[in-house]
Image 1 (tube, rainbow, N blue to C red):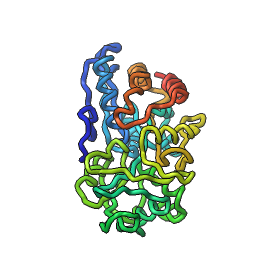
Image 2: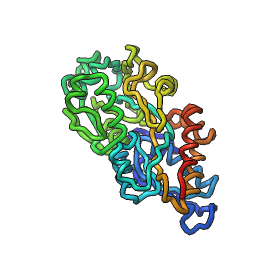
Image 3: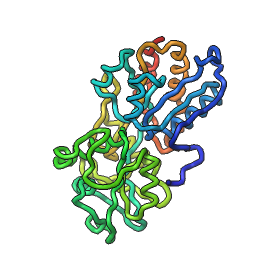
Image 4: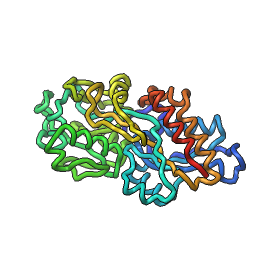
Length: 327
């Protein structure tokens, strides 16, 4: 697995323990959630800060967006997290209602393990690699080395956003594997979570896969991709911000653009999923937690951790969404 800064603990269950000073310590100040691995590292940092600054205990399980949605539907968590908005049919299964709150954002990188190769991919080349029609780096301008594709094996919002881009740029992909949190991959091996994909990429010479940009460490590099205007760009905070600024989130705060014309072309917001009603004694702890994560201090550390701070207009609407949940 790539070497990550010590404040970016990833994977598994993050249980950050502190006695709550909100209300009584008998559970009202303790909340738990599960879901997306994409933002797990920044959530870990934020929840650690909450324990220190607010005395609020938050436990978060990095289990993938699909599992997070399932746990929200099953009501085994106080909140979920997903890199893809919930589907209408899933929302309909939640009698308490769902509020989807954009929380942070980032770029999905096409990472590869081939030192000395400066990979620049056209849209057709990118699709061809994951379709299995391009299987050697010498077909895309680098040396003679087999491409070993790595993809997610679990239900994943990262996969949802990555395959949405492939479907937008490739009719063959759109008509074939299509777009979803899990698809039938034409080629490659699977790994669980961004953590698992990054670990496989680090271990396997000639491997290539998709991960959150913050996982591109050590021997891994990020390919330059072609955006909707034909510009070749690599994922950086600046190019991701340029693309995110063009996305209209819409009235429900769930909009996206699978092929933006400005900046880096595979960017995503990621959402916290809250129950609209029935939060009981956890209502105020939930509001405290997510008002903090939307604060200037919390959003300000996002670029240092490999994420993109939310634009202020989005923050204002996100705070209003958090305020709308009720006991």
